[in-house]
Structures are given as structure tokens and as C-alpha cells.
Amino acid sequence: MGYRNIKSTFPAGHYYFSGNEALTEGAIAAGCRYYAGYPITPSSEIMERISVRFKDVNGVFMQMEDELASICSVIGAVWAGAKAMTATSGPGFSLMQEAIGYAALTETPLVIADIQRAGPGTGQATRVASGDLMQAKWGSHGDYSIIALSPWSVQEMYDQAINAFNLAEQYRVPVFVMGEEAIGHLRERIEVKAKTTVFDRIKKKGAPPFGTNQDDAIPPMPSFGEGEKLLVTGSTHNEIGIRKTDDPNVHSRLVNRINKKILNNRDRIIQTDSYHLKDVEVIVVSYGFTARSALFAVEQLRKEGKKVGLLRLKTIWPFADKIIFDIGQKAKKIFVPEMNRGQIAGEIMKYATCEVIPYNQTNGEIIHPHRIIKELRSIL
Amino acid sequence: MARDLEEYLRPGIDSTPFCPGCGHGILMNLILRAIDGLKISMDEMLFVSGIGCAAWIPSPNFNADTLHTLHGRAIVFATGAKMFNPKLNVMVISGDGDLTSIGGNHLIHAARRNIDLTVICANNMIYGMTGGQVASTSPLGALTSTTMDGNRYRPFDLCKLVLGAGAPYVARYSVTQPLLLVSAIKKSLGIHGFTFIEVLSPCPTQFGRRNRYDSSADMLKNLMERCISREEADNFSDDELKDKIVTGEFMNE
Image (cartoon, rainbow over the protein chains, first blue to last red):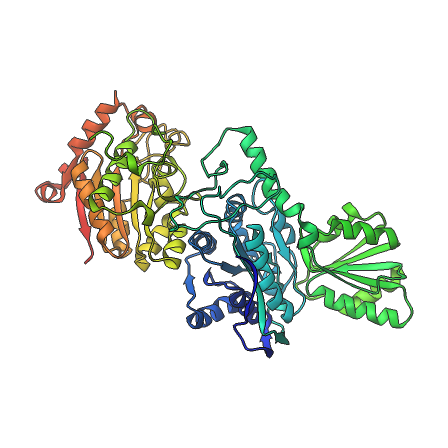
């Protein structure tokens, strides 16, 4: 139980993968042994590879009748003891939202890879976007907190898949790997280390599975078939799972705890990378594929002596509020290029004290470095 | 005798959540009698239910692992648990609206895949918990809170539907046929594959009062009169069968 190092499923070395393949291998290395999914572009390669690779590792793969069935069977498998995941894209992610709220309330650890495509609606199925970030945070009804990660490379599709499972198990929460079409289909060399650090869920016989004395703690999680006579329900419940559908204290305690257990631990969860943040006037805040273009642009302008730096968000939710406040204190301007209509720029405006300049592109294409260079020149 | 099934109930449970005259309490009793008859340990049982009155039959009442899920999704939650841990003996208990309307797609696909589940559908022919709206199982002409001038659409024949989707064992009984129902539940628990039992269960609160049944007992009497066996049905004309409910076992294999 807890963190331990195990042998990686692949021998240590370098491999050449697409992002979707790397994510699949990361999930398997992290211990994922149940997968249920439904075909959807541009994530389908994940399910195809799982269907083959699970034969090597004794995993259970189910191609379900729709995304509702996929996510719900994942939750069922998790309570039966599995580390489990599904992968999808925008329309499927929308269909999964009700069950995501169920997973948040029942504190069910699971991983969803959302390989984002251009929406809304059916949109452009084969084209890139990062338009699902607010849906990841607010998609289901009610108040809950989840964790969402934003990989920028094929290596990170592998690493963040492992991180996603570990965070899910540690915090008993749904974790989303918010890939983008361009990362899912990008091919790059990655390094697999000899050992993989994995987190196995904490079990404590007889302990209440839905409550603790602290208002931000994570209770231990038993599985079906262990004689615990579990009561799992998506209705408001007390610490042993008995439905309490009209008790204001039980509801407020439960909703507070499932939020606080994530938000109070955000310093441990949030990961960022920074480049050239000393002696800086304009800071670019970026994530996902766009951060590749942003880094290229920043390096280029630094060579010209421009005072520009980059903060890369590897974790989108919980949001890096304190870090954004800090960089807002030392920069004159924050520039936020995004493949959406400003979903993260709006968050940055909440916490930054300086001017925040969004740059939004929703044409189904990546934001090219020269576009960012041009925009930065105009504000430097 | 009256307390002989108490060990199957979760400690602290001292009453059922159902309205007076509801058939679900009888069904709860019969499911436990079947499990008791087979001497299955509650430690290996997982009961999965959806949303609605019938979903409260196992949760929290049964002293076993219970999974109370989203509306319509009980069968797919159960599929995930069963596929990952085949040692679990998984029974799905839910209502007609839950399993056959909002969850209808999962029902036919689980039957097609022949997932090893026992599915018990408590059919009260109406949405009880939400106030008596018309269901996909309400009879033609039924008065409900959304069909005050009578239901215009035909109900599903649930057994034909699930049989058509490939389930190896399908049965239909009313709570007024307790011995047959216990024997069907026992049989389904012994079959390795997808089994489906439709259980007719009266809802006096929502269905009865709108459709001119004077009492719960009248609803039970009506079910007893209308439920006939498959053998009896063979001797009835189509016209005579109109108001009858054919009960019995229907098998694919």
C-alpha cells in the first residue's frame, strides 16, 4: 500500500511511440488492468493498443456500447479492486460527465484520457483543440474537485499516465489526462526507466470507507468481495455509506471534504516548469502542445535580449493560483496563448495582479511559434 | 419463521422504505429466500441497483456488498465488477424505468454479450419515485401523471426484448406467484450467463390510485386474475389474451 517502486513493464531504454501509444504504456506500467471504451477520434489508438497489450498483462478489456457504459463499468471494476481507465474525446467526455460526478462523490479513483479535438458539437474530429478544460473542471453538476494534467510531449503522455493513476489512488479522485490531438498523434522518442513508482490504494479493514475525523482527509478504500459489506451510493451518504438525503450536516461535510482533500493538498499535486523567469517583463503562461510553440518563441526572443519567460502548467486542476499570483507580482504582463476561447486566461485573471493578455485560436490548428513571436513583439 | 431471514439484512435495518401495498417488499423477501435456499454466502454476493424505488431493495437493506449507481447504469457498473472479479456473484435489482428505458441499451448489450449476471427487473409499470409518470412498460390507456387521458403507446414486452437480444434464460412472474418466483431466482443464480427475471410488482400509490383500484388488495387480486401460465395461454384466443399477462420461463437454449 502507498508508494513503492516496481519493475517497469518495458525494459529500460528508449522507445519510439505516438502520444496515444505512450499513454497506453504508461497506464499499463502504473498497474491499469481494466479498460472499457468506445471508439472515438482522435483517441481510438489507445483502446486498440490496450486490446492487444492487455493480453500480455492479464488485463480485462471491454469495448462497450457507448461512453456511458464505458465510464460506469470502469467505476464498477475499480470497486471490484482494479486500477482502471477509459479514453475518449470531447463528445464522449461530455457523455461521461454524470458518471464523473458519481465518481467524485463516491471517491472512486479512476483515470480518463481526453484526447481533445475541435468542438463544440461534433466539430472537427481529426483537428486539435484544448477546449475541454472547463468541462473537466465543471462538467458534472454540483461542487467537486478533480485533478487534470496537461502533457506537452510523448514522454509526458507516458509519465503523466503513471502520475494520473498514482494521484487517483492517493486522493481517491478521478484524474484526467487532458491530451490534445496533436500530442496523441505526435511521434517522439521516449525514455522508459527500469523502475516505475506506483501508488496502491490504502486499505484498512473495518475502517469507514467514506469518512475520517479530519475534514480534508482521504479515507481508506476497500473492495467488493473482501467481506466488508460495502455500501456504495451516489446519493449523499454518511461515513459508512448509509444514504442521508435530507441531512444538511452530512451533505455539507461530505461536499466540503471531497473538495478540501484536493484543494488543501494542491501544493503537493501541482507541477509547473519555468523558463527564464528571472529578470522578466512578459511571462507567457502555457500548457499542452501550445507550450512547445511558446518555449520556441521565448527562446528565440531571449536570444534577441527580450525580457520574456515561460511558465508551463503541467497540472491544470487544481489551478496553480499561488504561483500565478507570484509571477503576476514580478511581470508587467502575462501572455496566454490557447487553443480555446480563453479558458485558462480567465483563471489567470482571477489571481494575477498584472495585465493579462489572452491569445485565442480556435481553427483546429496548432498555434505556430511565429504567431506567438509576432504577438509577443507587439506587447514587449 | 417470521425472522428467519434476519441474518441477511444489514444490522440496524428495521423497516422497509416502501409504501403500504407496494410489491417490492415481497420481492425483497423472495430474493433472500432464494439465496437462503441455495445457501449462498452473502460475502460472495454483490448487489447492484440503479435509481428508483426498486433500487432500494438491496441498498442499504441487504447485508452484502451493495452498489447503488446512476439512473439506468446498474448493468454496466455490474459488468465492470463482474468482468474484473469473476468470483463475485453479481445480482442486479432495479426497476422497469431504470433497466429498460433510460438503461435499455445496456440491457440488450449485456444480454447479447451474455455477461454472467442475474438481473431482476421489478416492473410496476410506472415511474413511482418521481410521482407516477408514464413508463415504457405502462399499459395502453394507463392513466399517469403525464398521460391524464390515457397512455397512447404500446408497452415493451420485456421478456421478448431480452430473449431477442440473446439471453439464455428469461422469466416473468408476479409477486403473487411467490413459489414460482423463488424457484426462478434460484435457477437463474445457477446459470452461468445473462439471466433476466421480470417481476410484476403493484404500485398502489402511483398506479393504483390513478387507475381506479380501490385498494392494494384489489391490485394484488387483479394481478392474480390476469397472470396465467404459458400452458394456459396456449388455450386462449388472441382476444382472450388481451388482458392477460403470460408468466413462466422463456429460454433460448
